[in-house]
Image (tube, rainbow, N blue to C red; front, top):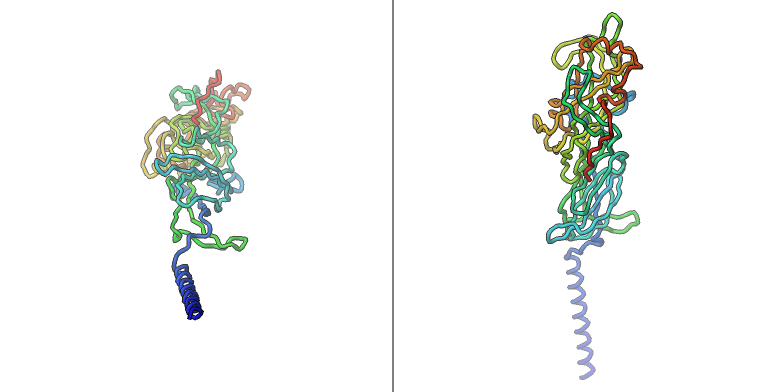
Length: 402
């Protein structure tokens, strides 16, 4: 009896174990496992539609008089960047202060990075293939600034020769920025819910669960096409103005803050020495509705935009607030080779186009005094490659906000 009782007890225990195994197996099939990897996030990067139509307006081509051949003159619009840099900040979950950061580089398509499920992050993305842009941040919780270096030139807006007078003011001239794109994601938590993860097979055949993060890069820098139209240019000696030698635009932002996308309030000037060859036109229709025989030359200028604005947010406005007037100084090459400085106000045009566009300057060559048109080249003391630079004096540099 004792032996039989013992065998029965063993059998009952075996049945109980089997029942427990069945229950355990059934439960594991219905319960959602926490993903195999909780520290993988897939960064998917897209570039905002960078056709000029999206920033300049769909009718920009109707206002463009210069025949810009990209095979000859270079690219007019934006070029998609190849490499993207990410600065990722760890956040304190109590007050969302940044407690640390690390950097990663991605292709323009994105890539994978290890992030902790449940953790909060700020993420800044911008293209890393720039040459002239200077980046700076004082500490983890301060603004993230981008600017360029000041050149050694002093721009003095008072024009001694031009009939279009500008107020007397010095500007520190800054290098044009590179094409810069970026985006900022703030206060993002990496989900702990398995349903928010995608299960994939990696290159090694491992099953990995990843959390997808998508971001769209938008321009921080804006392109302006300045076209100069010379009317009444012919006299009995031929063309009075042959072309352009340098253009300088004043009243532009010194840089931008990358998180907010707001430009610096400091106003500087930017110079382009790349003036495209003159083109001649017969009966060209001008913006004022008249037609004329004329010569046109142009220059592409990259800028941060106007001071103290968020250009992408303000492009739908008819006009942005005027922090500083915009003047353009153009070096006009006369038939004698002398460079005549011409300065005019383009504030209205610039503020109607906070995200870039076509700016047209019409100059009546017949109004320029003959003494400049036929002035010997050896007597040229102003302008040169930088169209509105005069009274150089001592070097003047504005402070750089970093």
